[in-house]
Image (tube, rainbow, N blue to C red):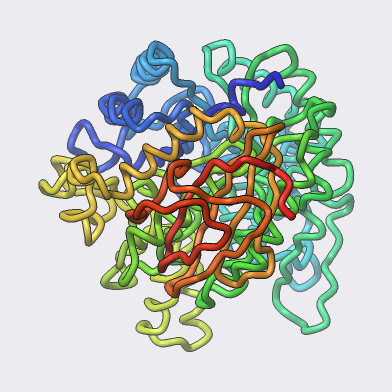
Length: 560
Ligand code: GLC
């Protein structure tokens, strides 16, 4: 089967602010990334996804862009970017940019013009509305980051819409001139040679016509309004136009951040015959955690969710595979056992998702098996969303201790601390004072140390990447769930003709027995394991230790 370069790739997500600081200001930068390309090449990744690097006042760490065609001052210059892109390309790596086009910064010239008068030609590039009686906002929508989704602007006596912070006004995609300006900007970057985009919050681009109030039976001040601003009917028309005017005929990778898309609707977005996006980052397994952040991993539900995505897109589209990103706490802390079984649970979870059909993504530090960064006090949280949540919890009367406990489990800063490179000051990240403190475990869990340890999470990820590239069946082989009813095991095969591989992971801290009569598992065909496996002859059953994962080549794809 023919495959595209981005189907064969492993993506590494860089949060530039925290990756590597080259000039001692405590903030990561582009020359810092350039200096670490050797590491990324050693690891074996092919595509670098850079979280936003555009000029920004950093209300939301770059997800509030004030100039799409300039580099954030703290990160360096356009020359630095050109050098980084050229060096990555020279090494055979690709670079995709994180593009925020649902909203801009309130410091973007478009918004400054738009807010300057009701008659300004760019007025309609954003959502401006009159308020209700008694000074209330135009509707009752809640911002995704809490509080009202509207801010009043005294200069013109109207309100503007922002689904995120008030410093991130939403662009009005109904306006054709705005859409054309976004396309121009994207083409400018593609002409420069970038290899594609991760498109932020893409399912929010369209808002329900008339911006109607949400039903509000509980009489809340604001109501979450997802049905009216997420995956709203007609949104695909915008995507089609964007693809035709901007992406058509270019060999690029596009990844949509796609809250609200399920496996049933995904083909519309990423179907091979639709000509839209390469893949989407879906949220269903994320919600499995966020709906019950303290609950242990529900392995059966996870299998159901990921299995449906595998099946729905089989031969029709392509999956993005991920467990972590900059908006989520670390997966070892969410679903693993960081105290008792850190290495084992990090590597078992890695094995589970990495060998499915799709393109695997690794978020910086995930390959070290980092648990959540621990914050000593609420003052240390830097994230704008964290600030809103803290204020909201205080208003509800929660104590600071209770809030700190909550934020340590669920805050986004928990996965944003500086990348631990070595055991020197500030983990080798900066010669200055880092914008967030170094991870508490950096002396043990750093790159240098893990490179030298055969049993480290880092070397395991490297082996996983190598295995994925070596075995063609892992690219296009059909995914089949095994042991679907087990509450501990996540197991599946990937099969293609006579060749098949079984991936068997115990996602629990207790032993778990895998029984299967359809094929045998032989030690001589063991491809990868996260525990030592003694020699064994052909087995049809096996008992896995706590958080044990094994990958075997098997002889048949037809389980009995
Ligand atoms: C996306 C980003 C997140 C950001 C938000 C607003 O969800 O991943 O970090 O805060 O969009 O741009």
